[in-house]
Image 1 (cartoon, rainbow, N blue to C red):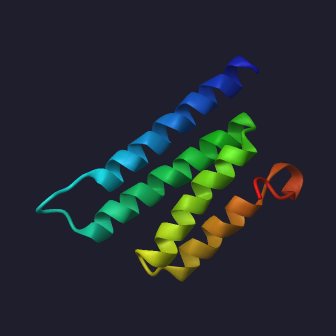
Image 2: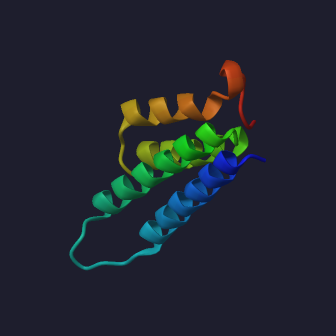
Length: 98
């Protein structure tokens, strides 16, 4: 594994951990919608980092988690469809993780 790939894997792991922390955070003042939006953005960033590093399975999982939140929690069909599309793409357009 190259140094760049390791760096992207670490970056993706960090974004994914931040997304999980965002989801588990409880606040009296912030809306649930904002929490889910932030987590989706972090999962998409994780997916991008994994994809750049060549970790297509992990990228697919991160995009899938974002898609589920877009669809179920935010009721945003457009962003959910884009995230599902990214989850299904892998190297050279092949299925990445399922």
